[in-house]
Length: 247
Image 1 (cartoon, rainbow, N blue to C red):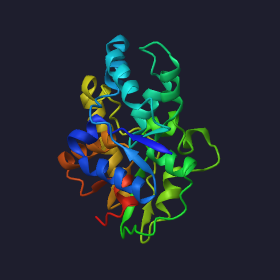
Image 2 (image 1 turned 30 degrees about the vertical axis):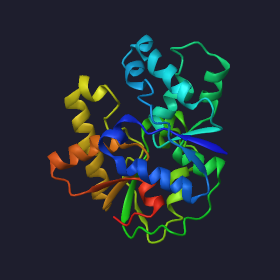
Image 3 (image 1 turned 120 degrees about the vertical axis):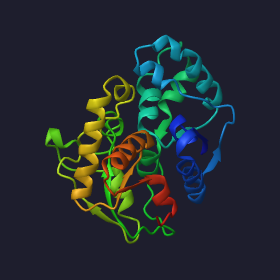
Image 4 (image 1 turned 90 degrees about the horizontal axis):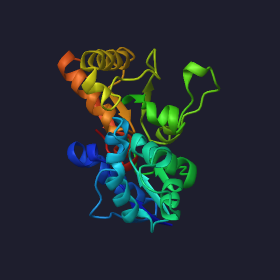
């Protein structure tokens, strides 16, 4: 399988270690990975803000970059959701349909496509709280939604339980939005900040040393809320843990 690796804007700008860990992890698992050097934003911010036509150029470039790959993998649920479900600012050619159909968030790619059963190099001797972003939870369905009362499942938890030494803290409201919500955090800053502080306090009170997530945008928002609110908790992308980071 030939994989095209897409690294979202937030990771490129603020969390490069998560992008590096994603590449290293896929290569450790025997995958043939390319990183197209002229990739840019997938167009999600414009589309989320109601400016769908303004996303057309970014979407067209994304297709030119990734149409030749068997799978497109990215460490971001929200970007995956945009490409797969909302990539409609451009004509729906066969190439576009191929890209949309074969784009995967990292966790679902590891869990559903590669079906990884072991990470022998990984050890993380810390208690973590898992944050599933709204995009991964309610759009990609990488975990069950507690508000539906459905049987429990969690693809990121399945992967993390294969890491030596890790333990888990369970917040009281595990599926509650952290308040980031893309441009919502700009237009409704006060509400967003309070939601983020409530979220990190919930994890901290449950005993979490780290909050781990598959979405750096949510982590960036929560990290800012924790620092301003004086909540002593750290943050790490799931790719880093699965790749062998110890702290």
